[in-house]
Length: 327
Image 1: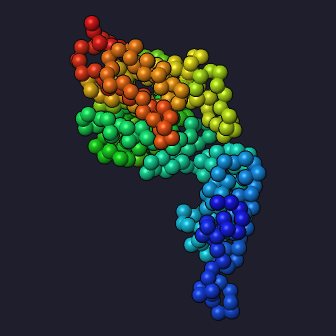
Image 2 (image 1 turned 90 degrees about the horizontal axis):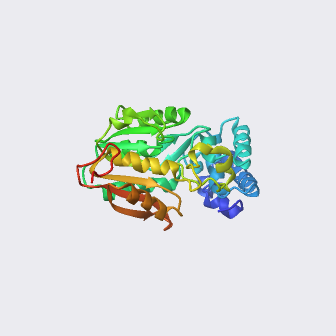
Image 3 (image 1 turned 120 degrees about the horizontal axis):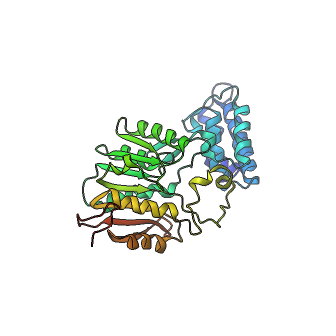
């Protein structure tokens, strides 16, 4: 879709049909339709010129935001008096490559609309697949789940929403993100989620005490030190602490996640950890070299690129204090 007349008609913002005209030849809501058509054309062109990857999709979202509506635009008969002012403000922010989610104040994730805020990592669609992998590979009913490096609480909230019998303990090192995650977990599953503000690179007695659990989910920071994100939305708005995984290979935090999973998981429990598409072999090695895991494999995302480490806790009950098998 684009900003042409054809694109506008496909968006469902037409001028009405002859059969819907009121006496005098004026279509109901005709002025609203004209304002919407002009808004869609102008906003799409503006965002496209600014290099926004999906200008027409974002334009419609901004228009709905400016109109203060969740209804399809074609159903609107009138617009707020400040519609153009609100749209101008929102469009200017998006043209400056501020993420759409921050402008709208929410991000879709699975069946949820999560709250988002500046300074907290914005959930990504590719992370949603972790829930499908968890369901597919779990060997027992999932009741106790830990979400490490939870960020906004996306994975934990989705678990609470889709698994009514589950409880979630989420862990986040950043205070602002931990506060937001607590809100999202409570909205998704009142009373069934809890957030620890803690650093996985140190000892966390309260997390240690949570063992044993049925599954560990994680979308940790994993970008190597020398890799610089190219998208302006990521570089300027996602906190670097949530992007860079530590060390030259970016695997310092993922290594800690694997270690914590070994400590926390009951025998047969499952780890699902997201990683960069070039880190499949390296993350499998983390689990293999740590010891205590079996069924170690890499799962692809929907584009076929390596995206998730899956590892099952060894069935042996004999483990040392760090989750390694005793020899």
